[in-house]
Amino acid sequence: MKIAIYPGSFDPITNGHLDILKRALKVFDKVVVLVANNVNKKYTFSDVERVEMIKTITKDMPNVEVESTNGLVVDYARKIGATALVRGLRAVSDFEYELQMATTNEFIDPTIDMVFFMTHLDNTFISSSTVKELFMQGIDISKLVPLEVIEYLKRKSK
Ligand code: COA
Image 1 (tube, rainbow, N blue to C red):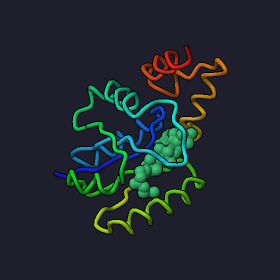
Image 2: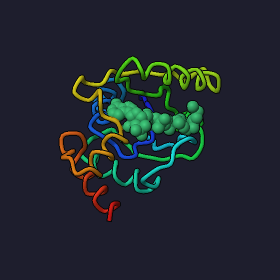
Image 3: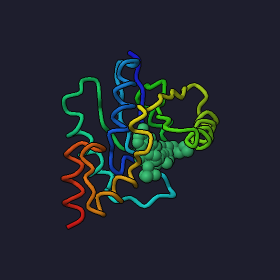
Image 4: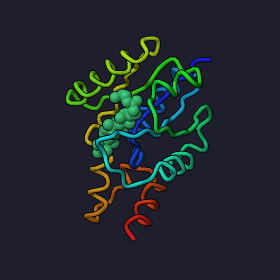
């Protein structure tokens, strides 16, 4: 069974992330969406909220699991027998960051491969911060995120 991990902040998950997840599911038998933390970021949603949100959104997607970690993604991969980490590329500007992360992960454990998917052209401008900023300004974001995310954002803004 080929297992991949799709790690990220997912603060919140967007249609761009779902696009990458669906592409990964065509290649792997199981994909574990792993809510992880970037030490340089302050999050809007807690780990628990991010996991809960993604679980609701992916409930009808077979072969998807949602977990979280406060440790290294590579350690988590080793623990569950995953052989690859999936990441999405939106534009050339993502490449440098991804290269640095991929080489760091390779340094920690060279047996785990990085697999990159290109996101659909329509999703290239989406990021979690953009979505939150548009929402705060009262712009309709229903084409950018699942409806459940809008509900979470509404509750958070109260
Ligand atoms: N569609 C839309 N947006 C996308 C996207 C896509 N396909 N791919 C990335 N993004 C956006 C995200 O929304 C996010 O936007 P934001 O900065 O506005 O929040 C941004 O691109 C980058 O997010 P993400 O891909 O989640 O990376 P990250 O830097 O937030 O976190 C971790 C990366 C959590 C995977 C990384 O820090 C990590 O592995 N942490 C655990 C510790 C570890 O293992 N460290 C060693 C490796 S460095």
